[in-house]
Image (cartoon, rainbow, N blue to C red; front, side, top):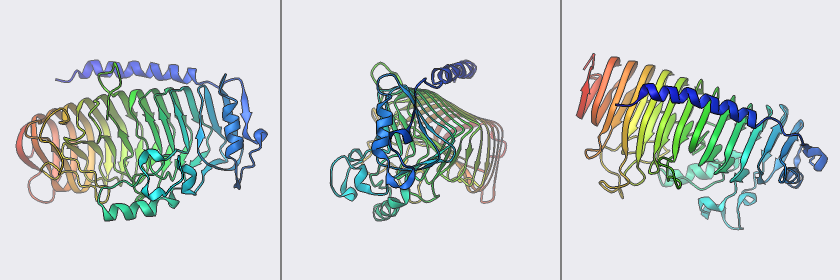
Length: 437
């Protein structure tokens, strides 16, 4: 069984880690105003050279790069350690809408690969980075989305390569707070393989149907996402675990998402890359409204791995479809986003080192209204989803809750009110405690 009591104590201990992070990221002595380096902030002149000079001034000892009110038109920027990017409330960092500005080498961006692009803001192997101030970072995504939507209509599930808004790799001590990120060409904030990350009081916005505009795609250790509003066109949060680093048992571990409002998007997800493993994730005190998918774990036998010790508690959902999705048959199809085919997708192996394993999952105090399906727990015959506990769960929906290839699913005070047929559909499923089977 999952060690819930010890995990809760671990979660409490992590709060002290984040308090220490906030202290670590207090304002550095040097303040560099981008206007002093020649930035105009008129929304028409490219301010990239001036802004980069301000960041370069932080290379040795760190500092705060401040953006007073204005619109700063910009191409890709590079960060350094011990740097605070401070956008004043009336300041906007506006990405160029010229696709060529984000390519590492000249060429046709429609034929480029994912690693051919630069994010608007990037940093690697850094310490003590903060983004704050109350302003806006805008990715100018409208210049990119139509082509991406056309590409996935031609080839369902295809993600046309585009740049992210902010990408950090292997950084320690990262804070993103009191900002709005919006209209990224692709993902908004990607702290990849980062440790001690705090994301708080952040609003992330993109149109409901803007392809692949994930809000936050984190991987790493000791990550807290709190008091955020996420309203985008794809995953609101997608915890990644594609590959584990040297000396690590899990790529992503000790992650908490709390007190967040989840609007349009594809919910709070783990996956689809889980080969490096994901452990100790807590999602609590969150509200979902008009969301496609609520709580989701998604992978398949091409990129699967171990996902364990996952806790969801105190969740409220309105007009969410479905409330719960744990699938080992995920097919990456953003246009309609089918959850499960019931059979292995083309190109998947039947079993092996990339087989998804989901275990030790607890859902407590969840209330949801789902105009379509209630939920899906869908494992593999050779890798059943195991040790799932649902307690105080109430879901009203049009369609039943499906459970396939699962064992040790235990329910206490669980009610599914489905308009069509039985509340639950079971196949190769060991389920106990159903009040309305």
